[in-house]
Image (tube, rainbow, N blue to C red; front, side):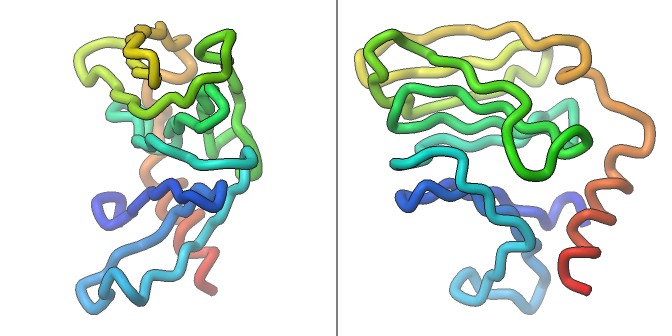
Length: 139
């Protein structure tokens, strides 16, 4: 199931987590979890390649949001201002070979962020926990 999970950011301030099955079309996806972390656009979203319960998002108000579903299913565990001017942050990318992620903002500034071990080292049973979270949302 882990490979069938999708994460999207929307222009209506939402992060949506959903399951894509063989019979699901993109038009009929129903999110199993909807988060509304900010007012304004959510531009970039990405799952951590190391931690299945961790994902990050970037926003129109210049924030980097990091979620850990093991710790909280309702809000980010970290909210970091990427720039002082609150310029939109359009892109995000986890580095699959290290404990860093990068952000890019509307001014052309790229920043590299070092993640704590807790956010970058997989916890035993994490994939199964994520599958249970997704499955329980449809019951």
